[in-house]
Image (cartoon, helix red, strand yellow):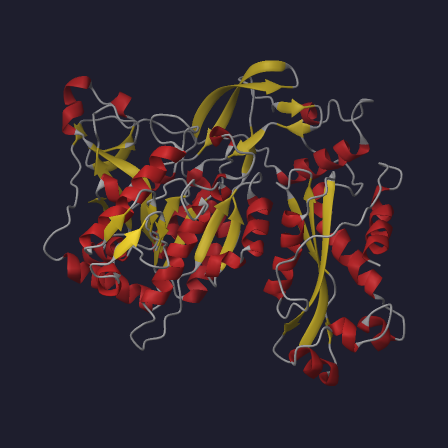
Length: 581
């Protein structure tokens, strides 16, 4: 039934545009035969695509399940569709319908819906006298899931730059290409960028940096209390592709070659899971830490499917929100085209996170949850500590609205943003902008881990933060040409912050970036792995743990967030390597 239902749905939209065939294939769902929640149903559908070994141009996965609403058990069908590389996904859900109590009780008792209802067209047909069938529910879900693939014929929008539609009717541009172009033009903002960054003028001064002191325990306790009361949220910036790492998938999904083979995103989410468990220990209920993941157009759907398939790695509250794209322009102001049917567009910089939080409803969601403090970091630092209680506590102690983690640079020319002041205002500048004779005075750099109050984020979302121009040589429809891309920087929020602080951290404990290709001498997957496993060794040795044999030793985030609990749980033990604790 599934194959025929999918074929019927696709025929409605693809007939006359492209020839296609639909072939059935077996794939493991890794969930129960009768999914009992919406989460489990989505997980099963995404897993079927991941585990399918057959090759195709597209993959369509169908999973039917039930879910408990406030009044009843409801049945529905979920569809997931992926491209050949399994890097772009679409999702769709059919209409939900109530399951009669007698049947619901049998399902809850462990029976599969199909074994309880003996109707070839499904329970929905039995309940509606054939007016609605299971095949129609599958069709609904498939038609919704295929929307991101631009198969529906749509009109080309009016009032767009003429260079964007110059080639739209050429013979080598297909109807599917035109559909995709029309959808893209409706999404992009073509208003010219006018607010550009102006380098401040004035005397360069040294910024004060906070060093951990004798009151560290009290500061940590403040952060813990904020987490316990549900006042802390985490943002993970996960918009980057893994292309520099030689991977076709989003950077957050790239696995490190550590014993557990965990991905960058998995490590971060499991650390949040550990914090949630730590601070619900003392007979005090914790609301948990909500996690918001900033994505890009290139990474959004793949990350969504990855999280569905892995059930958010045990974190109950995860929301994705997407960074806006801006069209690149030629030096004369014309919009640059990647090819005849695609605009050359790029994410508008990590500083546009503030506006994205407003327009996506993230800020309103945080306010509804009672969040007051937000920790924000990029996905490519494997040692980042999400919702770090000490960092949050330091913000609270200093009554700061904006905090940044910094470390002492190995040399004045280390390629991280340098913290300084100009005319009494804190800024982040490139090392190359500092006069050589003054460079030794400015030795602290930002590692892109930020803390914000919700009030500052709301203010930043309304502020017209400046754009920076990035001049790039790109392949365009006219060949290799210079284009201008427009980006906002996240640290430009310093201009509107009332009381920013800079908190020193230890490099070996909190900075292991994964930016360069495998084999690179710095900031590569290998160097990050070495730093992560070295930290785990230090934690173990501090607890008196000894090792036998050779091999790698890893501590899972569920075992320890930052070294705590190891001495109490594994005092003076001996492990035979390799070993995962």
